[in-house]
Image (tube, rainbow, N blue to C red; front, side):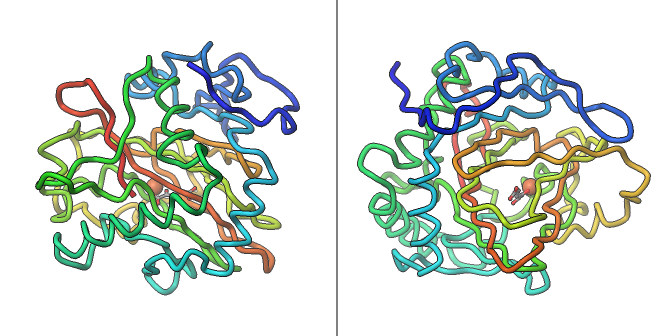
Length: 298
Ligand SMILES: O=C(O)CCC(=O)C(=O)O
Ligand SMILES: [Fe+2]
């Protein structure tokens, strides 16, 4: 399979799994450049098995492509549907985050069609998230197809991703993504996919400082997620004393991709420092129950 990679970002290559985390290492990271995805075809499988915590793929897009896209997102071009995180997070979505759904399914799937059409004109031809990025993910997962999760009716698809802007002071409090899966908006999706989700973050525009994805040495297994834990505001995780946990920060440059076991591992986005907005695309994903595909949603 041919995978486009930007060669101009290639710096150091770490072919090996590193054990990272401060003060105690706990986090298994594999990091490589985009032209080496073929050597890591089992890496997402290793995340699902709990053998790896994260995969960082450097240079999935060139810095130039990312910088053009970040400029357009700053101008709200295309005019994506804009939705909000809780106000204190100082962050917003282009597109609609499934766990904060806040609308009826019919409207959601109509908005998803518009979102996908606008997303197609945001990226250069052939390099869209639904094409290039899904191919990269697929090549990290033994060629398993990656696609938008299908909706309940034919022709309906969940939004493949959301774009997120995080302003100065913006953050996401600590949480495990598997907590989302028991929310009402997941009722249909949870009939299609494994209860263990993971996620990808594509760094489009980095903050001057801060805005790091920080992962903590604390796991919640899918079987331990219960309805009373379903909070996306970090309320449950908020009871955990983070200062007592070892953690690892994943630093990404524009064009870098991380696939992380965010379903199991407690994680947060640290506050953005400085006036430059952090821009990412973030999708959640889980394998379909027949294991033949991986379904993604934003
Ligand atoms: O933006 C990130 O780095 C992670 C976002 C995240 O954890 C989430 O939306 O669940
Ligand atoms: Fe998350």
